Length: 116
Ligand SMILES: [Zn+2]
Image 1: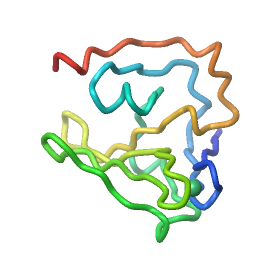
Image 2: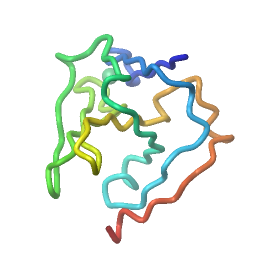
Image 3: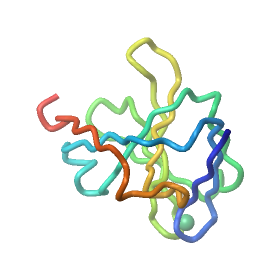
Image 4: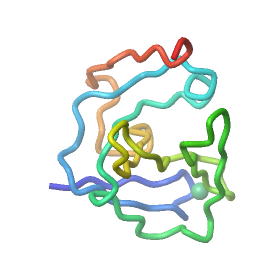
């Protein structure tokens, strides 16, 4: 089972070897609210960037622990790279960039990142 995602212009494409998520984290922090993310987190080894490495730039803020990667052509941020609480490499997937996901049927899990 896998699903695919991309930025808007299509320069950046990726696949994730996992079932299409049924739920998403909706975070209210200053960054997530501005970009409108609906996120799911997966182990880095399940994520594969198919195209777009040269089209990506990174944005970091606060503790700089998360590398927010966006397409320099269309500005879309489809994923981010980081490490989980146990130190393992993770990828945060913006489910708005996964066409297979039915956004209206996603079970939203609020996360109070603004207070974290
Ligand atoms: Zn793009």
